Image 1 (cartoon, rainbow, N blue to C red):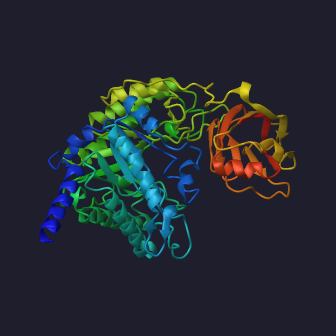
Image 2 (image 1 turned 180 degrees about the vertical axis):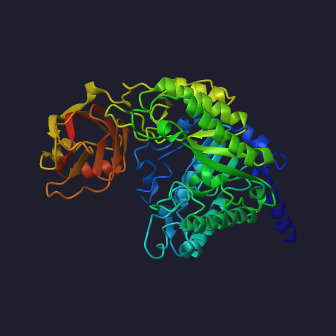
Image 3 (image 1 turned 120 degrees about the horizontal axis):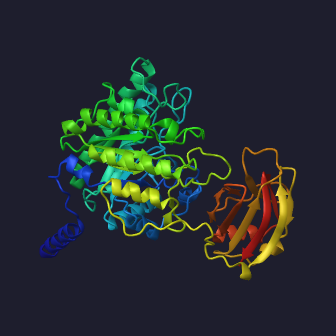
Length: 526
């Protein structure tokens, strides 16, 4: 009996050792960040908070992440992928802040795909900053950097990071980076996005943030194994440059000396983020502004052996591709000259035919695994010293497997110009739909006077909302609960039904209503 137990012990030890990955404990932070080169954010995906189950991944209009998608990024020269993850909406037990194991497994799957492509991965807690509130923060809302919410916030952060560390430890080498928080801030405050050392609320928030960062670092290090030496990115308030450079911001103490200062830079704001179309040229004064910022980061951190990465950057599409190419080339090359890698933010939005230039940070078409602006990406990858084997251009005529010759026409020429205009599709039309059936929508400009939003809602004939849809919408639209939303007037999009969607549509008459959507045609491929 004793021999059997001893042998079993050896087998267990051998199995653990076989699959554990050694982590490089000797590489310096500056040498490490030099390898990260140009990166990309899986934005508006695992960070979405519109649902509490696995469907949240697609709830902000982006498709379910695939292995092929990650492979396409790697072939495009992307060396680092930042995977923003929101956790609070996936907590199943508020008392102990237990994360839904299915959600943790989904996150792990995507992280593993990226690491298999030899990428660096930045994994964080993203939209877990609670909204502005009066009184004490509601338990389960995440964290908030105020003294009255500090104790509850730290319980949440410690619990979440303890679980992350348990999932991601010895099987992951230095290619996996933890990032403590994303844009921690006083939401709704006058200084939400700009730090002021003269503001008492700001100073109190900074003290809380310093404490949060230290707690998270301590939690990661105490989990042992590879996490004792894992690189950790830590931000200041709002991930801002000014707050990071402030004397009030304190880097966490770390016995492993493997902290990276994390910052976001949409600089200069008027060119990169302001939706006004009047500022579309990348001028010499903007170059000087970038130089000043990079120099400040270098002098305070890099020069003193403290690595820095820019976790988010980008320039909104204002139909100024050549100027954006120049900005990316200059930004990435000059940041790398200071040993600071850049990671572009991608929220999927790129289309400007409606005249809306606000936060159009879409670069990678995740449906086709190619690029909306390949020339821009090539410049950025080269500027970071990287290489690419494939950067193909987005095909706007791609139809996602839909064949119009095999399809059935449901409806033509119906203008949903307001909520008073409806049409009903009898259940017999949808009775043969099944999982994988595709409904193709084509829209044109509506006569509606209300241009604030476009929405095509599905309801029953008693005006009650249908159950929440769980399929995916590809092309020029998105799906949210029981509505499909075109992103522009001239839109073509494809609703690929889940099994649940098919059941919903096949069992009742469906009334279409909404606002500012002119349906040119609806077709079904069964």
